[in-house]
Image 1 (cartoon, one colour):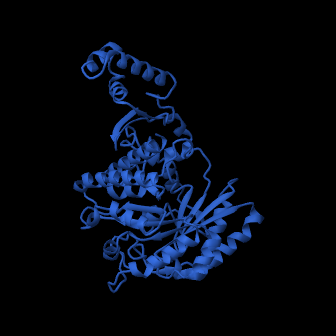
Image 2 (tube, rainbow, N blue to C red; image 1 turned 135 degrees about the vertical axis):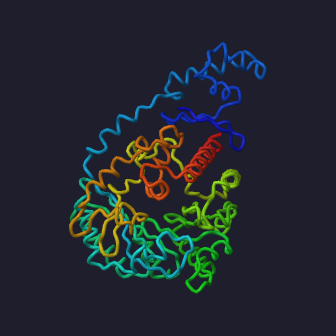
Image 3 (tube, one colour; image 1 turned 30 degrees about the vertical axis):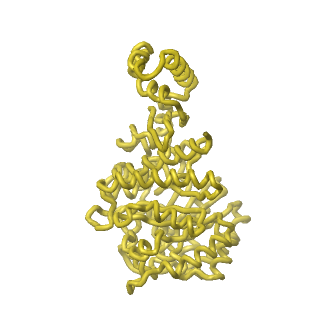
Length: 450
């Protein structure tokens, strides 16, 4: 499978199965579009009105060499790999600890219903969190590096338990030959010097929630009484980012139907001095007024192109920043299993509620059909786990012929389920946006190389 596209002045060809990417001239680009369905003579005849015959023949030779070298029109050699997925032993690598089912903001798009997750407000006790870490250690097999994300709601509303669980995890590292990588997501309302100092010492990454421009952020992320939170959090976030040397954090925002000009929000955050930025599309039922609509896609595509072009220009000036969705590794990248099955939700990655129930990920929490077990009994619904174990790009009909499948790894199972009723379905609007992001990310690498 080959995917061709033009972006910001570059002719780009992606050989999907090998991962090879080629920045080509116009004649080579046009030849590749015809190469599988036409003979050399037919291609030369078709293109003779646009290019000289010698130029065409030279480019044909280059295309033939790339094909023979396995860098163009490469056959798919991954599908057989999937037959072993269900047989593989389950190794749990990461937990999302819902340390607080409560929040001090009332974000209008919150899938967690202001932290309640379709249930009740609650804070995780140290005892439940300790059992969760013990479960992770006991079910991690030979894997040494383990990840724990403190999530909510708002985790800082249960700050003492966060600190106690980090201390407990550190105590277990040498005894169990494990290494914990702790992360935390916060809206910043309760962020203070003591929290920053602790996070700088103990948290491998911290996600700071902010949507961009003041008017955009305050519209969607107000306090319960309606006041905006932008002015309160921005100085704290700047101090925190500077204290971490502009590394090991993300300012993370959500754009909606109300700000389809979201590139302005990304650039606003960059102009505030943030170097690690993620601004992502809201995922919401189409009936919600803030939901991304199919009619929004042309403008959103143009915004991604605009953002990529601006990032390329700033990079040339030494004013670059990282945008999460444009970060792509074209040389190493994730292992084959990750390329095919993604985040590992329901198998390698689990969410834990404040009372100790296991769900496939934070977005399934509260849906009793996906309750996997609990910290006392372990995984009791192995049938659900096995279903997730077999969720991969070859189990998803719409992924098979998608050029981006080895970059998005089939996308989010929760989004697929919420929009189609099946974890092997596809959230079509999300897929369209993912394909555009992949194209822009590759263009930025091409610009960097050229």
